[in-house]
Length: 136
Image 1 (cartoon, rainbow, N blue to C red):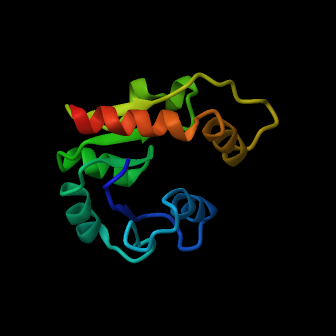
Image 2: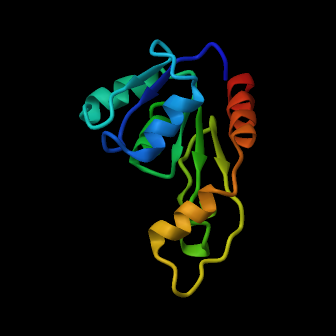
């Protein structure tokens, strides 16, 4: 979403997804702030509270952002019944969830299943969800 700055927290420094996000932002140094692995819980809560919108996978920071009252768009990467948004989504009036049905293969690792699920989403779908959250 143009005009917004991206603040990255949580993931391990150097994670491949971080490089993709920076590349998607056009490599603009003033558009992406990478604090991965550099924030404690209180600092993360402070950053999340004031965010225009928080996007992430179903994780502690997504739930923390929703608890802080931030707009959140959460990507549910394990849509099996026991891990679905119906049971585990971040709670709050300003929380939206992206979840597509996908069946896990019997031999598939949890990480591979999450990666295959993530591949179902286009950048356009994610940007549309972020716009919806920002307009609400």
